[in-house]
Image (tube, rainbow, N blue to C red; front, side):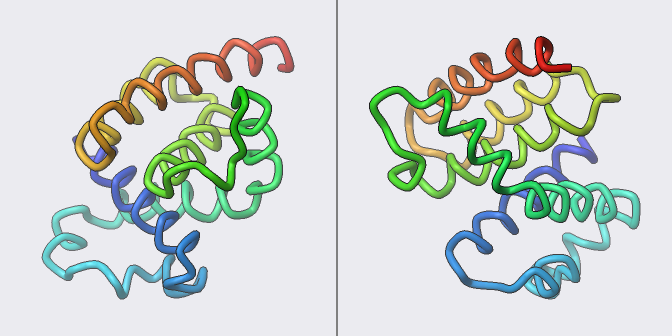
Length: 140
């Protein structure tokens, strides 16, 4: 559950970044999050969230290309910003966090999209990540 909270924090930060609401430094210092929430997460939780945020932003071009390549008759700029933030952090994790099984990454993304996304967003997230994951195995 601790990593789920970190992923939620990371997703919210990536959403804010995409909306232009905060610069990278402010996102990574978590000054926008409640003190109570940060205290419950602990240093390990904040470090995990920072890793996802900074890693996603450092690799945003590659991540967006991978997402775009799996969209059929759709453009990445038309995606719901919540869905896009969840997809971005999840693709980062699939690409670079090899110590975490892909099914865990996808399950977490689906659960977060059920909580924060639109009605059927979780199906869309699951479909896109499910299409991406096998391709990453072939590239490795």
